[in-house]
Image (cartoon, rainbow, N blue to C red; front, side, top):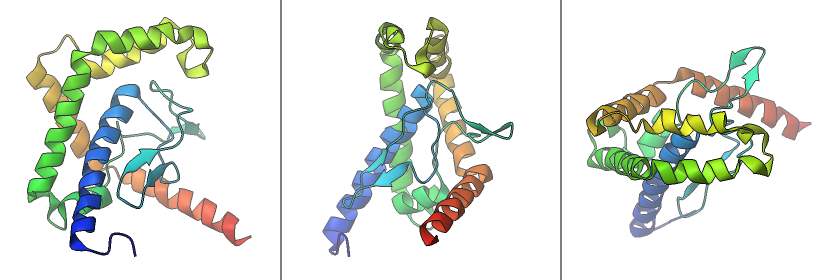
Length: 186
């Protein structure tokens, strides 16, 4: 059993909350795709991390002409349950999680120019997803430097709600599990 004491368990949940907030904001701003449950990992002490960065800046996969990424980032009811319990919407920890996300997003937004410069200088690296300066525009679309802070906070909160209610993510996770569990049986 991982984290067998109350103290270790609470620390693991705290680690999950902080790393999940960072994950949500980073995948939102950088447009990281292919975010199925096979690419989202959790360490024994609760840290959440992503392992596949082959699709970014909004270059999302399609299957049979259907976009697999329908929410701006992955934040499922199961993730919210870990953070805030059964009634997570009214939990102080869920409120704290939202505040962490918003503060991280606003921090990145303050450094939008620096982020764009880093990505612009990386265009010459020859990555398929970052092949031209147009690719870098994705960051501006996400960070919305021209909008007032209150408006971008509202946009991010709306995306958080949309992610929580995205049934397509749950369906995608189900089929991904089905596909890979059948391979393991063979």
